[in-house]
Length: 497
Image (cartoon, rainbow, N blue to C red; front, top):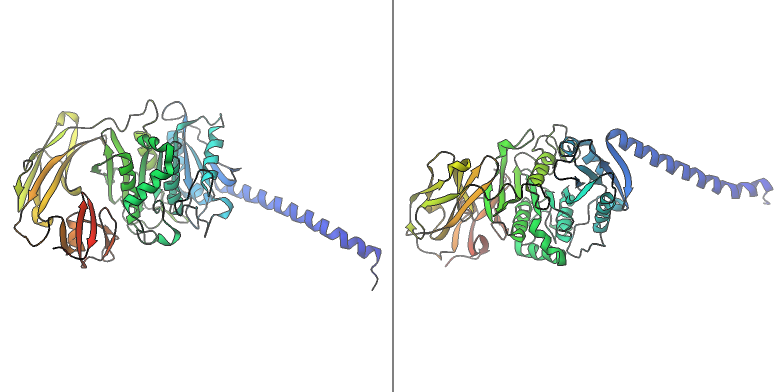
């Protein structure tokens, strides 16, 4: 049938009208989305920077350290968004307290898998994956004179895949990031299928991290790191968090450990345990296991949200305080936590002694330096502590087996400084025989009590992996044989001779 002129006109005009309508609708939707984000997150500015949607919080307060502001990038996890962290992540009060700019970006182009950051594998460069986007974001904000950001105070934090991306960025660009906070993120070099178990070793992760840094590896000398996770996290293997801490400690050359005073942490549910790993100048690495928390960002403010815990340590407050107190790059900082800390000496048993049974370890500390207590370790496993002079602790040598063992005393003061004496070695001889001095056959629960295994989860669901190698061993009553192939590094073997 012959078309009329009107029909011919309509045939050509409708697509143009439709395209115009779609354009207007898209613009309106974008405006509504931006308006909704800003309404939900007052104080945050929504922008497109380096190919990402970014929410930026600029404080009204003055910088707390040096002459410029700190910058914190905070990265969401999978199935999460920048809006989640802006609305419920607990950053605003901390940003105002420290005069710190906070930037929450969305993973570019919707991320990978279910919105995840692309931390997977080891083929990372500064110009690929999501790395160039994040470095571009830092460059853009550093270039804004009105923000007055100090390049020596650039930090990054994140949950889950965001935590994995924190490991990538702090390894790839240690010259850019003075410190990072990893919340339940897998370690460097792992894949998407590796989150449920520790799929790599400390030595492999150290190698991957330092290789990514390349010519910038000397910047590790002044970088610091923090890790946090929940003992109820069954999404990402809990062992990754301790592994990440040990990886960074090895790279930094930090080996003196002390316990975190959990009761002193900010937040509304601070149970759990933690350790600070220090070098001669002070703290370099912090790792905290928060009791009762799952696979969540610990906001600690009671609100909660999408993968955000309201009942937890206030990690924005803790992380920022840790980074500001120990920044090694800013003139006017406390140069690593206030120095080497109080002096302490192990006084008994004497170095080189052969001991058995119940042995009392004693320490003398310089109380004029404000000592608040002394912690005692054997082979870097915490035996216990004493906060009353004279400082002493009873050690049951049968719990750790025969052989040579390193004793360590750590003196603490009220400011968190530590002093360490780790030059004492004793030989344990309980007359047990029947095995090599560097190999033990026992239940995993006994390995844990002796400091040879890490406990993951809480009873009755706890399981174990080997200290150092992080090999999965099984459950409490499973009997395994562990060999110490180097100090503090245990591997599972078929049996002990």
